[in-house]
Picture 1 (tube, rainbow, N blue to C red):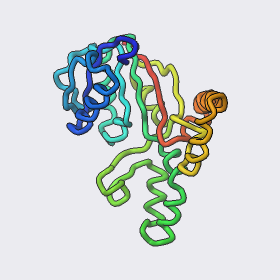
Picture 2 (spheres, helix red, strand yellow; picture 1 turned 30 degrees about the vertical axis):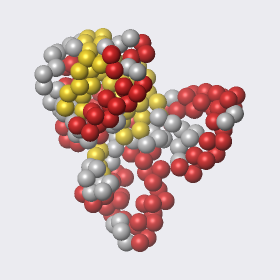
Picture 3 (cartoon, helix red, strand yellow; picture 1 turned 180 degrees about the horizontal axis):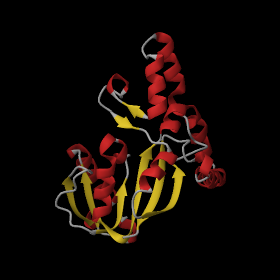
Length: 219
């Protein structure tokens, strides 16, 4: 955002993430564009006035962590966004995550670490809770794109675009090969073009561990 001359305000529930943001922004040379940093929760953006921002960016999948307070979170984000303003968000994808982790899931079932019925419940609901949450603390809800669309339909917004975060490059097993491709400028430019094009296809939006969505506040 600093590259286009925007004034930036940064909020996060984690003091450590705010610290890291300051470090990285300073390294990139854009600290002068930051107006403030505050420790805030997306379900309670206390102290931020209504209709404050031309664009509100919610990256890192914050809507996935609020669980049954998703409506409160969306209402708060819309409250601080100006009418006609934009919301850009990354959202955790249930389908893409399951595809990404399917080998570990099946191995865990075979070893007895995971219960088949409980994995089936996660697949059905998208809720990653309890012992199935990463390190027992990373509890979240993984959305399907169709589900997130239905939630947004309850609000005065217009969905402008959506895309998987990646499609062709999904999967750790491809990383070595992609590193090699990056050394060939012509090949890499063409690959990125394919990635951008295919990731935006309706059938691909759920394919990555996250999807991206841009919507505009209408009123």
